[in-house]
Length: 372
Image 1 (cartoon, rainbow, N blue to C red):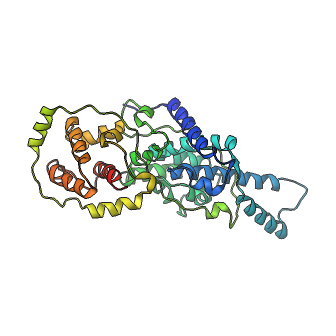
Image 2 (image 1 turned 180 degrees about the vertical axis):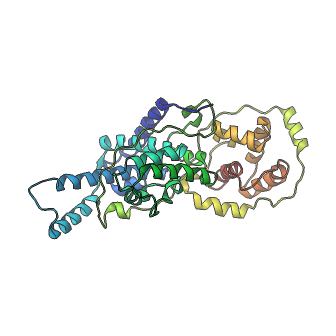
Image 3 (image 1 turned 45 degrees about the vertical axis):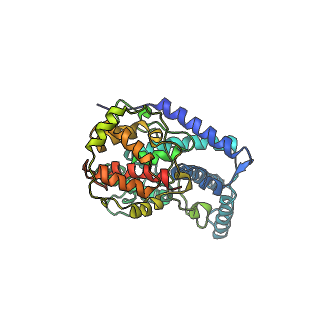
């Protein structure tokens, strides 16, 4: 079964997301600076796609200046002065709401396409690169790729590809197949949108949950690259993605009779399969203040696709068992206590493999609840 993209949902979501963010920011400020944009949302990829577009516009301004036939822009003095001017200009980014909102809409749409289908996204990037300068283009734009960068970064400075675009496109597809199991969870990436407006992956990918090859919209054309040094775009802060809880959804009460049945299944297995100290250290490196602290019950913090994955991969297809597990964890007083419970009831009993994506995503959800 082929997955279909709901482009209408994506477009509406991007519009709503941008309107909310702009409304919040510009309620107290008249314009946005470059550093404001770097920290604008909890989705680092969204922020850096806006910066990437400004870089393209900045390069466009340079091209306009150099296209004037009456002046010698090859003169070394002119070149140095122009470089200094452009670098100063790059540090004077000043964007008002009317200009920022469409940039943000495009950035949100691109980030979602990259999260769900990195092959098509990066192939589009390569196709939009200046002819014969693919490697230079990737090297220049690498700093703006925060999600699934491994899919394309291996191509930078690789000999043997030359200027053959088709070779780059094939290499991206082949590399994705080789490393896709090590890439970051799509759900975790999309969860970074949740503080503004939860993204419903099931509404976007119609007909099946499994991530498959999608057809992305073309990204904006990239202006021809030019050498520059010490600009805002060269020194833009290198941030890691920040993740947020996803869409809350109400849950039905579990039947008392089934609770009793489930409780009889549990045995006091040996604890220690999961180490709460190591888990906290690991998740803390991925987390920022916006990511922590889920209010209310855990069940209310699951997106539909998370509930589907946890039920299928961790709880033997038993949705009631998942419900009971979440309710039991909610009653714990700390992350340490929750991990002890998970170890004793679920890890050994259900044969969990601690390093797999479903287990790690489930544990991250628990971490968010308790580590405020």
